[in-house]
Length: 78
Image (cartoon, rainbow, N blue to C red):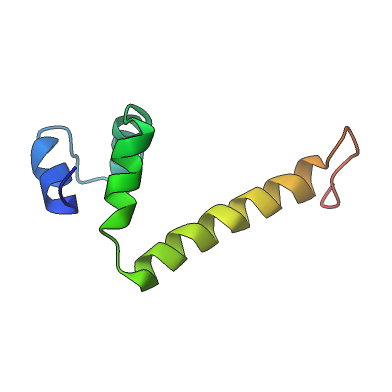
């Protein structure tokens, strides 16, 4: 993908105004991307936006570990 505008324009007929629908459609579309397409999209982000994306990923993974635990242990948030 050359840019986020290209991404939006390519799938413009799938976008719906409801935020939950936008999330579901975006997830579905991005889930079909190859690793290289995902990396290309990330490469276009500003440093600030890239840090935000990585921070959100890290936060979600930490939350999952705290909820589910590791190596079969119960998470800390149960």
